[in-house]
Length: 285
Image (cartoon, rainbow, N blue to C red):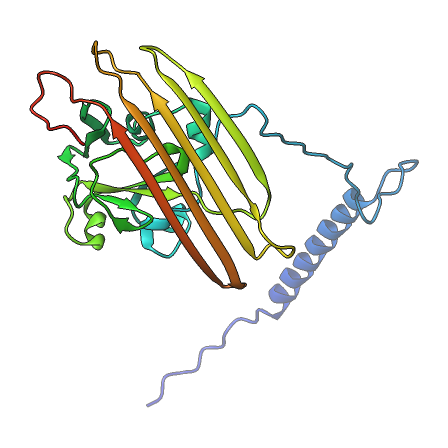
């Protein structure tokens, strides 16, 4: 036997009332928003395209400290920016060296964090430690990306910048001490003419003179040269020891194509002096 059917209550009237209330609420909200969006009477009309006054930014680097170099030749062998190189690299450029009046290799490398001077032998050459590890004079020094025996301080009159790679990344260049390596980048010929002469004097009878010449050799500037040199005397605190240093460097560059350059360079350097008494170091001569 089927159960009796129970009639359900009709909700049509309730649903219609709810829909009417919702429509009235939307109508009230819409009118309120329209009233707030309307401008008050007498107010100026808003411009469709807002305008901003001109702002001029002027900057000058005159008298400012030298900014860090942006690229390092030896950091990746590709000339990548320092910020894009996942290595610890310090670059000391010529602008900073001129501001500091650096005259020795120790003056240069004191700008690199993690590099400390261990000893100096009568001004002929210095020994350094990178991150606490001794930098071998045979393996841990580069000149334009190639290894050289570090038994004489490179002449600063022919140095454009100094790059220091720290940590095990230096192993990319072969057999080196894991603390890091130092790369000295030589000056290159420039298309803009330059004539420079420097004369200096200091304590312990130190005297120094340098010159720098560069510029184009032809009308279109594809053939360029550079000639620089320097000489110094004195500077030792030991009586009877008067070191003499002199050197000359020259380079020739030919711009074959926009992407191809041929460059030849040569450098001569000599040192006259004796080792400091008390150190078992032979005379560099």
